[in-house]
Image (cartoon, rainbow, N blue to C red; front, side, top):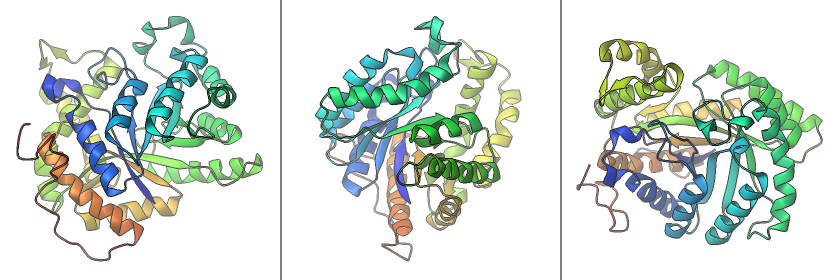
Length: 349
C-alpha cells in the first residue's frame, strides 16, 4: 500500500502569506521520506479549493523543490481545456520534474468552474473519456521525460466512470464523500473485473483520498481537527447550496455545524478518514488494502494550523513505514519536522 499527500484547502481559513506554505513544505517532507506522490487539484472561483486554479502551475512549483516524489494532478478538469494544451503544459512540467508527473482527469460538476468554458458543461463526461486516448497520442509527440503518461479518472463512485476507466485502461482516483466502504469494495471488484476483461496488462490502479490527521491518540487528534474540519465541511456546503457566508461570518453557523456533524463523525470516528493514533490508522489502511485500494492519498490541508500538520506528518511517516512492513512497533515521533529551513514548525500559523 502506497501513501501520498493530497491538497484541497479552503483558502478562507488561511492567511494570505500561508496559502502555499503547507503544500511546498509538505511536498519537501514527502520527497525526503519516501512518500509516493503529491496531488494538487483544479478548482475555480470558490474559496473551497480555489487557491488551486491550475495544477500545472502548482506542479511546476513542486517540481522545483522536490527530486523523487511523483507529482500528480488530482485533478485536471479536462473539459475546461483544449486537449493539446493539457499535453503541452504537462510535458513541460514533466521535463522540469524529470519524468515524475501523472494526471487524473475529472469531468467537473460545479457550474462555477465552467464560467471558463460554458459550452463544455453539458457534454463534459464524454469529453473527458475521449481525452484519455487523445492525451496518450499527444504525449508521445510532446517528447516528455516520462514514456507513458500515468492517468486516472476522478470519481465519487459513479459506476459509469469506473466502467469508463476500466475500458480506457486508466486508474481510478476516488473518495468516500458519496459512497460507503462496502460500496467502494464492490465497485473496486467490478473495476478490476472489467479492466481484465478489456485485455489490459496489470489490474489497474485505485487511489483513495482520505482526510488525514494523526496524533498520539484520537482525543489529541480531535483537539486539533474538530473546529477546522467542521469549518472546512461547512465551506464545502457552499458548493451545493450557494454561499454560506456573509461578510466573512457564517450564516446560521450552529445550523451549519449540525448539518456537517454526520460527515465529521464518519470521517473522524467511523473509518472514512485517517484520524487518531498510528495504530488506529494501520488498522484502517489494512482494511482498505484488503478491499483492493492500491494507494491512500492523505488530504492534510483542511484548516489545521500549519505547525500542527507538519508535526503530524511525523506520525504519518511512521504509518507509511508500518504499512510497508519496515517497522512493527510504535516509536514516538521527533519533535516536529524542521524541513529545509524555509519553515520551522514552532513558527507561524
